[in-house]
Length: 282
Length: 277
Image 1 (cartoon, one colour):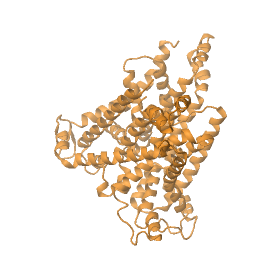
Image 2: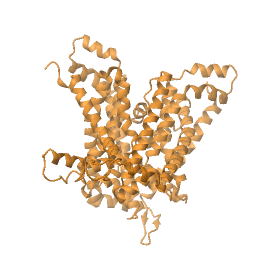
Image 3: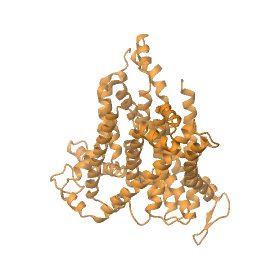
Image 4: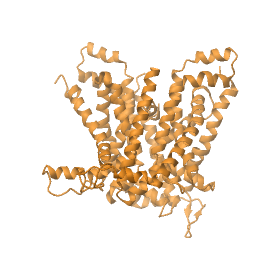
């Protein structure tokens, strides 16, 4: 029913925009990763694998990458632990208050990311809220100084920030489960636990995969929370990239690391899509 | 062990309360500290003051950055809608070579860490010798947020009754008229939802802006600069004000949605699509 002219008119402008502002920049990043920087600080357009060689041979890069992945994995785990039961509660037990609770989960997203991260800093600091309370109830006599400027602080803050992001797709997938399936399971004599593990959970796996991917990928690429709360032991891979594009001035090496991150992220997305196909029952 | 404890609504209620407490704790702290007489030190506050709000009112650079952020968010919203709506229509209705790649590329910034989007655009602007300014930030936000407009509108299109458009075309209206009189009014809610979401996401965006910033700061970057320099209770005050405005926007959106009696969860659809549907 839609003419050729109509289809061209809707397809061409976004295609051109996406090509110029997404495809070309990614390709440039690819090119940069094979270039190098001369002594005088100019970019040399000679093609070689030096940057990748440096990434593989200098332990600081892959150690930081592994540490970032470990932080991201913990964020993913904890936001799932918080997000899944919450989504389940809202979808199956909240009754008429469902919409209200849903909005309550969303509202924190409207407070600036930076400001929430900073609020955690005031909570965890040596004269912060938590330490004052702990001393007030005499659980400790000195302020605990390991709370802030540690991977712990980064994991806590990122979990706070990405829990709503894991909640959303899980909630959406739980909401799509036909309720008569759940009733049928009850009617046929399944216990609530059996109904959950055999009917509800398998059907919510697409949401779980989407939420897990979100939490992992977005926290893997974060560089602001580590700068604010991480201290030296909480430095993540993106912080290295930021410094390479800033003071250290080695764009090609930074591009090579970014490209590795991009490849890792794309791999994860494809992997979760494949898993999801395996688990979809329709 | 017939009734496993994790299916007990009471257990779930307690868990939900704990999660809400976790999500709201920093926000409560932030609001309290914006009235704290001793700045950010000391808890609980011994004296309350409106001082930080008074200082904030006279803080020129902050309000300049708020204005910049509003300009950026508005312009980015226009770009994202102008290219995102046709992109959704194209994905819904047109077949062309590379459609799968196009779909993936459009949605990619949604799931990609902002640093990758920001850096790749920085390289583009460097090679094209474009000077960094608010314009480059607008281009960055607009490009990244096309994904939001496309997913929201695409979800709306799935629910659209094509018969109306068909009737309009049969009755002699051209595509342009049909688009403005049938398609857009039917997608009104998706478009408004997308616009609101794009606007707020842009207002809070920092990872992309971080690399594309010229001389003028957006609000998040101004806040970042001050947080790096040290203790600034004013930040708590401005965040409290913005939080209040966001709440008003949410209530507004909620009313609109209820009146239209459409139960679409903006955001949920977005996340679902981005997760690779």
